Length: 364
Image 1 (cartoon, rainbow, N blue to C red):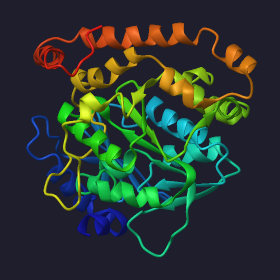
Image 2 (cartoon, rainbow, N blue to C red):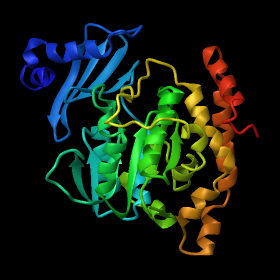
Image 3 (cartoon, rainbow, N blue to C red):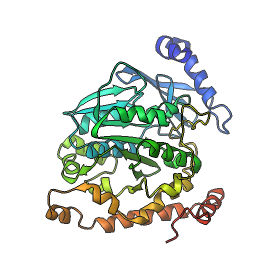
Image 4 (tube, helix red, strand yellow):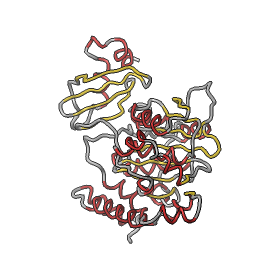
């Protein structure tokens, strides 16, 4: 409450409430920044957005919640664009869409750009009184990044509330900072999703993952193609390195069933239990972790059959033409991912060796 008051009502006191909150959030870190300086602030439909800087560290906050921290770029790119595009593709032509709050402006911009005909609402699944159901719910970085409340979404109870707001055949697209958390956190995150959505799919965009889930949710190739037919949408996707429908498919990592070796022994996060996830903010002050990415990327070796079996084509000819060269592109991308992971040194390399020795990895 104090932080909210300082941010909303008292900017002339050098934003002391927000500064103190940030310093407490980063307390104990080896490179905990100090002397935050406000670079910009704006109040819009998303909330009160504040960008701050301390030395070479930048942070973005929405209503006092830390949603991004970096060593020079506090914005989200390819992962966020993949999140919105996959959500749009896997929900057909959504008529009613919702974004979980607090939502980054980039998430809202992407939803309006890719789905201009859809109604668009902000959703707090814990708030009573609104029982609308949606064709698509997108949960981007903001709701998971608060250092106080990631359990509002990343818990069995939170995800059940989101599932209850989906229509039959609706889709949930959930962002997850896979490469910025420990392997145990990734395993517990996927175990939590699997408790509520047993058939989710995993996609990788750099060090960020997108989980696509929903009972009966599937994608039609022509719906993926349609995302690129508007100039504004095409430009927005290309800024994230997404040039066509196949670029939405090549990030595919695997299904929930294929990931069972990663999360099978992990404990799901629950509001009713004392175990708490860390703040799931993308933190570029630390290096990308190779182990959680290897835990996901290894399942690309299983191939794309599970993905393509759920992808709908209008005809056999469309399927043949659309997928020309897809396997080669997919395996080239897989090789690049695994090669980059294999180049790590030091403690990360030791963690990879232990992972490859414990029976959970595919060694082919």
